[in-house]
Length: 119
Image (cartoon, rainbow, N blue to C red; front, side, top):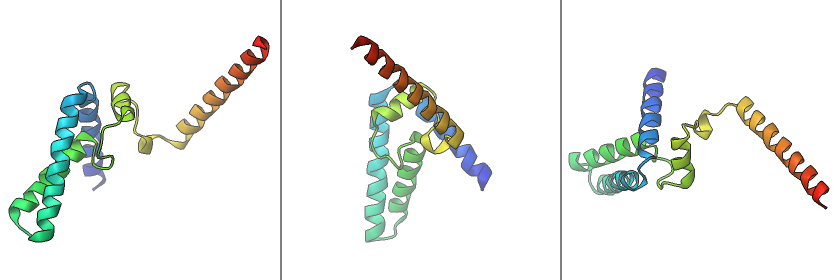
């Protein structure tokens, strides 16, 4: 199961990175995925039909591969992180977060020193 999840995570990262260069097609693909997913959910609630199930499955796959399943909308952060090949927040280790925090604190201290000198 872990290999399957890891595989789809790698594929999703690659597709997200590629699509983030083209925000309008990315939004269209995401929109299609969202509509198909909710169409599937709607029809599944009415009647368990293959057509409805196919819609839900296709929509879910599109959203998962495009990296939009949980966010539902493309934000600047997703596009920028894809262009920079950054890790998703869920893939960032605690050590990386602490390192980034330390860097930001150093920058803040330097900025404070510069402000003091300017006054």
